[in-house]
Image 1 (tube, rainbow, N blue to C red):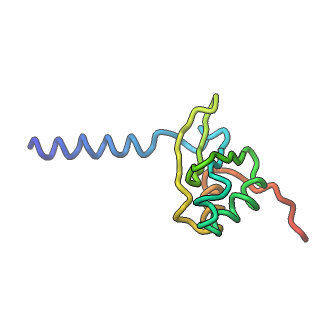
Image 2: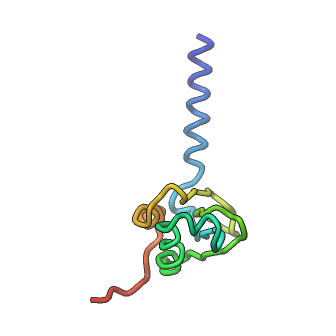
Image 3: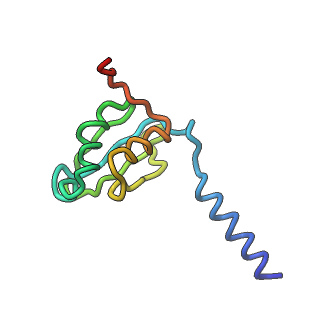
Length: 111
């Protein structure tokens, strides 16, 4: 009985931590990354950071020496909601991730 109750408590805690915010809580985002170092070893992520990210509404790119590439989701008053690593993603996946968080690309189509 104690093990089952403990399992339920742990499960509830994990669910609560994984859903701390809703998409409507996201006000803006910041991409933090070094300008070179690890970014140069990640050409797909570098293309996203340099070419794609600046075209998204409410997203800024901030270069921090030695920082790994991360998407930082921000709420009211620049309160940090979540920090998502980008190192393991390709350019398309980075774009899909940021779009899944409610951000739209404002770049005009060439058509």
